[in-house]
Image (cartoon, rainbow, N blue to C red):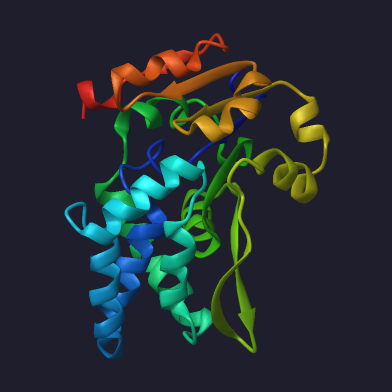
Length: 226
């Protein structure tokens, strides 16, 4: 079955330990010596002990919306698209070498071919594309807006909760019309997981299992092994 069924796999917290949007921005800003002030702002917004970070955590829970990542990508304004792509290529190699969630990879790594995998992530396209290219598979991801080859610091499209539409738009409705396997740790992917032949849910905290009661999922607990 695994040789014939498409595997639709989330990236952050599912294949890799990192939030790859945050990780890519950190890696990119560290590479740019002229971006020290932006790096300071980045850490002020992402440090778990920062009042700004805690304020965004509170607001996101209150409003049930992702706010911080839209602020963070503004730190890329004016940077060339080619520069962020170069950062993404290097960061992808680091993720593949050191940041895999091994338990997830064992599900598919030795049993299916890369052309049966679609990375479906709301992370930024440069890093998801770099990972997909390295793995030899397909992908959908959130897009950054560009103007004249430079980043505007805004999202062109955000795939949070919209992965199904992105997959069918890019690869055709038949991808999801046929049986597929979905793997994710994100509750925003629950609609996709419900349609999956075998839904795998990555649980980083045991208490989160109760939120998934509406689907008959196979639960994986990576922290017990990695």
